[in-house]
Every structure is written in C-alpha cells, then in structure tokens.
Image (cartoon, rainbow, N blue to C red; front, top):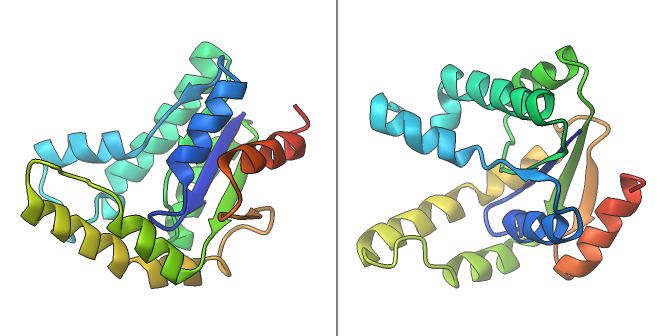
Length: 177
C-alpha cells in the first residue's frame, strides 16, 4: 500500500506523514524530493522543476513500487504533485504493479499557506536562497489550489488546518487500519 499525501507547499504533508509514521512505525517514508535533488546534481533541469523530468517521474514510480515489493510494508509519500499528467504517470506505475494507492490532498487557504511558508527556513545558512525558495513556493500556491479539481476521483480531500493528530486519525480511519 502507498499513502500519497499531497497538497500545496506549507499544507502540512511532511508533518502529517511524521504523525502517521509514529502510529505505523513499520511504514517506510519515501520523499520523492530526494530523487529530484539527486537528478539536479547529475543533469540540467531546464524548467527548474525536477517534476518536469520524465526520468524523475519514472524513478519515483519505480522506487515506490520497489519499496513495497521488496519490503512488503506501507510506504508513506509526502509530495506535492498537481500536474494531472504527472499524477497519471506515477500512479499508473502503482496500479500496473497491483499496488493500492491512497491519495490524500490537504486543502489549506492561501493566506494560511503563505503564513506557514514565511515561517519556515529552507536554507538557514543562505538567507538569499531561503527567500528565493519561499518565493518559488508561494508562486506555486495557485497551481496547487487549482489542481484539486483535476486530481483522480478517489482523492480524499482533508482540512489541512486540523491538527496533525486529527488528520492522522482521519487518514487511518479511511485506511481501515
């Protein structure tokens, strides 16, 4: 089983996955950003967004499938993924492998997202880079919010303003764990 936690930057994806991991310690946590960071060290990313690399999408799908197949444990994935074509590519890898994917999307109002992004430090040793990352995250909010209408029909939308505990309880109840 794969539990994909989606939403805009600052919506609480990683926080929710951390809370789920506490309750399901056997689960593996897979952050696809690490694949993107690795690829950036090897190849140029013309658009600046590693999700636009077909290789990134293929590797994310294959690695998640491999984790489930090799270790037989649930995989928790905190990752913003809003391009419907990219969602289809990655999630098809799961269905082709016969793996159940449970897709959750955290909905949070724009002003709350901006406040959360402003409160984070992405690169504490480089304030200029830190601000650049904040601007990039904020610049993606609109696309993330609009994507809610294009996500697969079985996507479960959650109120991202709930506490991590309440969100984890809701996710686990929906997974019938």
